[in-house]
Image (cartoon, rainbow, N blue to C red; front, top):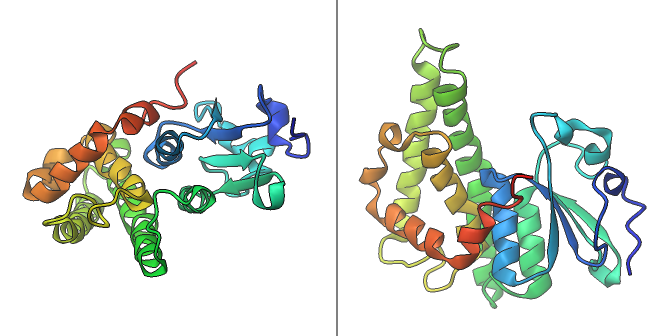
Length: 235
């Protein structure tokens, strides 16, 4: 049995089984990336729900694992050289899990680097831009009621990014062709989130991107996706 007591986060969220992966998260677009990947990989893990309402992501215990105070974060008791490792940033966690298992990434080096490019495309583009769109369109609508610029700016950038994906996915089943990878897992929760979380489907114009919409449905139809998008469950 592994001793995870050196990780202060386990004092606030004790591990029932310290011998399996500990996930600290919430069912947001970034959070479900990791739970979906864990489900796809069949890795045993214990989810811990981080309560944004109580600002738990800013607690000293959580910040001890992720100094940036954002979900998700993770402890793998069987990290490199068999030693526990703590990780944060969803893209980095996805890549770690893929490399750890040798799954959800291409076997050849060139394919892996191309996949990494698309993961970074999500991290640096789709996530931040969709997030800003959602913030101004849904959560700060009253504050910008007399200024259409913020919503228009991020709506247009969301459209542009979907256009990039549309061209990539024409004639492809997945981002990397015939193989489902962490690139798909990184991207699809944000596309889904723009609809179900931000209610922006019509404003962004999802129907203008049929290849993306077909791909999104294929992603959502996977059993691991159907389970992972609801983890951690409400207590």
